View 1: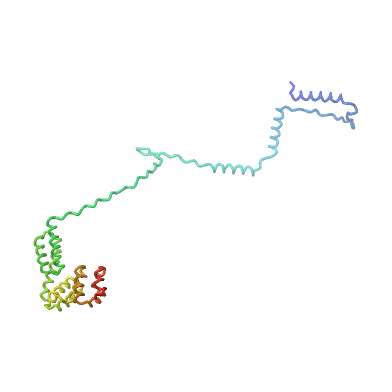
View 2 (view 1 turned 60 degrees about the horizontal axis):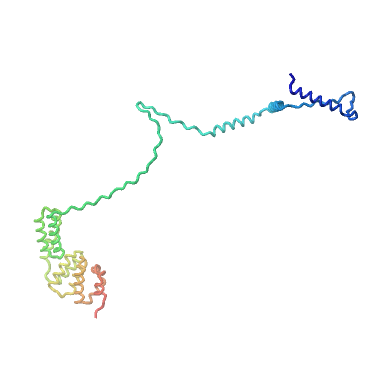
Length: 293
């Protein structure tokens, strides 16, 4: 059987011979030195032949250019880089075997934020109400203490004694009553040794006032006034002792009486520190700093 390539060669040969016969003798080429210029038959390749020729050419070029060791090493390095860039696989959780149970790791539960605890404020408990005896003992103690503050130690002594005898079960009140009773008895004992004239009593009152014994000083000034009611300096001393005790109204009354009897005592009252509790009262400014006709 003849191949398609042989058929195409025969066709080309017949075409070329016909062309040569039709050409004029003048146009034919001359034969030089016994050599004939014969045309080579042109071969026309089919598509399958072209593909085979291209494939053979590629194989020749591949064989002609061997791979260099440098490019091979580069390609190997690129493969290593691509392998290293791949993310590492996370190990799967391994079940822990237990003699009784198999514990498997679980995911952490979401944390729920609980609202803050609100603590209720404790309701203040009411103080215990005093009993009948305690209330009566407190009332008796207040009455006796008023007499003691006024300097009436004889009356205060009687009341404190009756309180201790009647309410002996109320220990707190009776303990304080015994303390004041001892002080009242000591003051009564000193009264027997007190002088009888007004000037001596005034001098003793000034001594007690300077010592800070304002109750004793008040009592001595009152005793002195009983003997000499119109003595301005005794009224002034009584005002000072009452001012120290916080009795503002009675202190202003005694000071007014002293300034009425002796007006020049205003200069002494302007700088006297014993009268400092009275300076916030507007009546004190009127008595001390206002001139009288």
